[in-house]
Length: 187
Image (tube, rainbow, N blue to C red):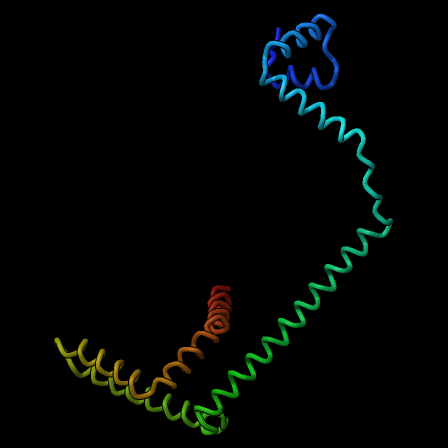
């Protein structure tokens, strides 16, 4: 026999699947247990309210299609507004850069001249370093290498950044060409 406080017993009592003997013992239990009597009365009231409640209105046939279309329109509008916001932000950022940094930095010939001159200067100092490394022996080699690299970074930061960007952007292309050469040599 099941415990009258168990969920299984309550479910059977609510569904009306108790045998006549179980129904009599259930009624006797309700008469003796005040907590179960209060809970049973609340459940009966809830059951009556739900039984008498009207059915919810039916949704229109095209409700799902309209809802999905509405969400898609909203998503497209968010994308459009996001793109417009990004364009405005970039335009304002470039405008402020032009205003504060001056038109010299936005002239392509000035930028290219600065990059090429900086790169040339950097390569010349690197050549001098390599030549001095071949001639010099001892403790000053590492000091010299560090000094030249630090000076090249401090004196020509734009050319160092441009050179690093160039190397980074062309590394995959150069690696593919090298692997093709090695493959051809092996065959």
